[in-house]
View 1 (cartoon, rainbow, N blue to C red):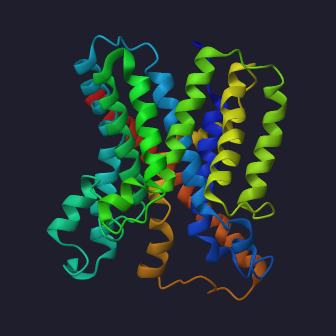
View 2 (view 1 turned 120 degrees about the vertical axis):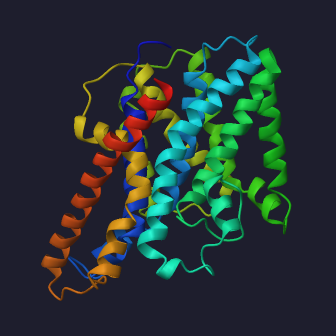
Length: 334
């Protein structure tokens, strides 16, 4: 399980980030080449989030596969340090940037100390965090904490993770009213564990060569469910459908190594910055330039404007990845 360049995970990350970005900017693409082009191309941004969660589950198993189970406390501390350094610097900077740019006169009806603390430290809140995309990071940090605590069970850590997974599945059957209980029992948490299962399978099973071919079918099926050409309303069946196709794509890198498609690989590299930064650009257009979706009457020019806006988002995300993410990782982790 060593020596693999996990290109398809990066591709999936890039696609997932693009799905979320497109979902949140779809109004800018409507009334361009067709009246509802944005809504038709990006109807289900939440599927991008679920793909992110599966990838997280897989990567956590993959990157910790050689941890010594006897070093339980060291594993716990090192793992949490790495994940905090990966998430918090950029998220903290962008949270304060959001307040500075878009909260009128630091409106304390919108931003108060309690909400600020809960937003920055990933504590579930009734409503969205200040930088609203942070709601998914609340789940990421929950998963990281669960995963880190599993190290304390030493050689039984996988058993502990499976036990938590079963409890979480059971909790989904109840209609909780409290913020914390609803947060912990949310069905999206299950996607992390699908990633864990994928990682465990890769450690135990030789991935068939034909996965390198059928992965294209899995990419297609994920696109079709995103476009609502395939519709799945049942949560459990959706979990299985997305989980199986992500499993095929992710594990195909262990069947054979192929030439990396650099544009999509780079998109995967900058996916975290892209995910957090993409709302800033359209909000700046609206707040400071008084440009709203549909301000251009010509459909083709609207399409060109959207491509230009998307290009700006990509460039800013790339710079954020290089200047903030990589710099803080190097500074804090060496």
